[in-house]
Image (cartoon, rainbow over all chains, first blue to last red; front, top):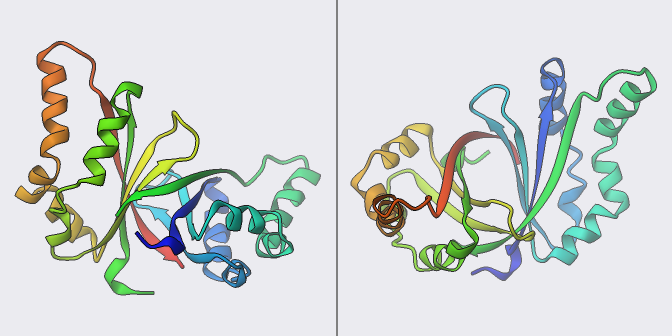
Length: 111
Length: 111
């Protein structure tokens, strides 16, 4: 087993139908801030084949510590700047959030 | 984007607490039948860091057709033989299934 990608974080995101186009654009033009982090190995943005199901943002890390370090870093804020701004704008206008997300973490048991 | 791993299948598995040890053993000693399939790129068995959450079996494929071909193949039955036998045994004894699984599929939107 490769030591360098033993820890996996998956962000499950449900986006409102009218936000999907912008949501996909944000990821296709992503800041790549995460790519510079120590212990980061790779990531994939997974689009469900069935419309209406959740998107998954999967990232592979050397260790949980490396992932936690990123999630508390300025790069995390930089990488999510546009999405966070969309959420703030909706909140300030009294609208419902355009997306919901939940982080879950895993270790690689086998390959 | 690498053409050869653009399609992703994720099998979400919830195992009964008393079945977890055997479940993990089955994957750690897996048959590797899937590895021989055309269009198969790689797979990871993800163990949740929080006990009680779902395991994820993630496989990367060249295309949906390659994945469908595998899921209808003798190799699929061979690769799942021991797990399927456990399910059959529970059924024949009138016990509840030791695990539940659900396949979802995705395309890679970005990396």
